[in-house]
Image (tube, rainbow, N blue to C red; front, side, top):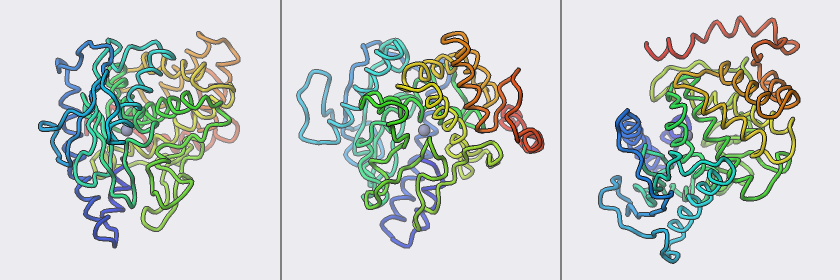
Length: 366
Ligand SMILES: [Zn+2]
């Protein structure tokens, strides 16, 4: 959950919304701390169990220690819909990674999948904490039960995949790429389960759980970053869809670690455009190109390096037409793939704007 949304809600005139947002901000900061600790080398991450699912009920506490076991892989469905939605969402995600990308669970080695539902009191978030999936119930005004959105479940588990492949740091451009990977594969899991083509898909993230009283909006739109929502409580979706609108933000919790949930709009849109350029089902060639590029990336990979890698993977896996489709997609968001002519009209404004963005490694050190 982007902190800019929670910040808006924390200033809401409605005391219930305000209180829920403030509690979520505090609890999310604690979970984020746990995630970085567990990402540290040597952390005990993998237990090979063929991706066995276990769902627990956190019983509205902000601790996982005393959670009640609700459903295991072989048990019948629970009376609690949140338990079953989490179970099914983890299952669909596991199956997508296995069948489409030939990856055995999050770590590629059958890591068990533990989900915790009813975390905290009206908790407005869902989280991968480095080892578990955690779902809040939402405050029923701005968000409903986070287990209700398959792309959100896929998004969170993909944070685990990214952590165990490229390990993209959660700051600045690498952080925005990390967020974008989660949106890309979260959306692909939903498209795959609905058997939609790139043209048919809505490319929205979290539409099912975001503002239940407003139809048609979502947390993010990969097709139209900046157009996912616009309402008095939340303000307007701040995501850019082009490098000329890249937002330079401080690398702090308040600054969304350099805008990781904001600037992700740029690579998100590039993926959507590549998928439409290639055509058909986006989890096929486009999804494989992005997955191979993710595996070939490192902690500090930035937008430019990732764009270059996707074009190289497209050429290697699918030939020159796919490479052109990918190169064109990045060109449309203002990123010129290395060794190709710059997109028309961008030549003048790009370098000047780019001077404002020191590379992510430098920002990380300051
Ligand atoms: Zn995320």
